[in-house]
Length: 274
Image 1 (spheres, helix red, strand yellow):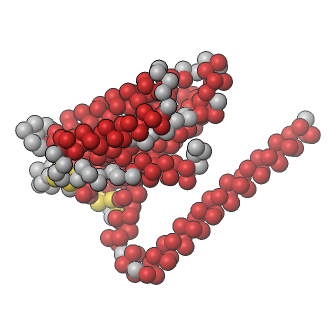
Image 2: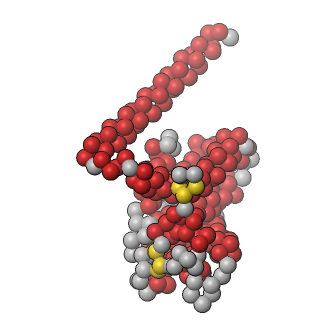
Image 3: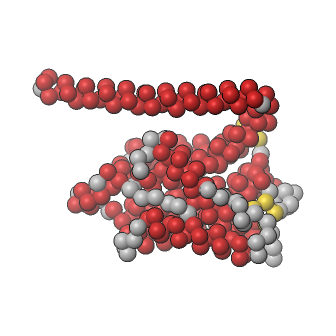
């Protein structure tokens, strides 16, 4: 018993040391970047600058979390940036124009559209056995194009006085902290609990580790992978709403540009393996 457990303990300690080293290196690099930036630009440490960094980081972290879930399940989603643009445009269009829908209804519609897009991705990948890279790459091009067609390639903006809830969600400050930070915490905590303390969450890890073994073990692989893509799209929609509220406009040619890379980078830095 003792002999068999000793190698396991050594392996566990080695793994902890490796993780500690990785976290330490990243923290050291981050500290160095912050200090150098602050040295070149003293305004970097101003309250306004810190709030801006927190706000942007919170918004980017939302779709990075969705990307992390997809990567954990063995996939990838390259459509995140274009979805932020497309769904941001729809948020402004539904809230203003001739529709002028109540904002809570707009949020519901945006989330439903996002979920439908994610489910569509999942069905193409799971049922037709298409590569996630190709499916989501096509969506990256398609939804960016749709956003430009809908807006006729013009920037969509709104009057903050007419959409106070949207403006508050994106640019509001509560107790000195940007509202998107509270939104991020409200997503991060339940998602973390789901991934680590529920059966479905652990199944997602199993699918990413060995999809065939998970399937032979009775795991509903296709359903869970589809749900992962749906969640990723929903979090991209939430990020789109917050970004629209923060900036006050959505330029279809540049909104969300390269956000898919931000999401993938955030997920990988957070410990996900491609």
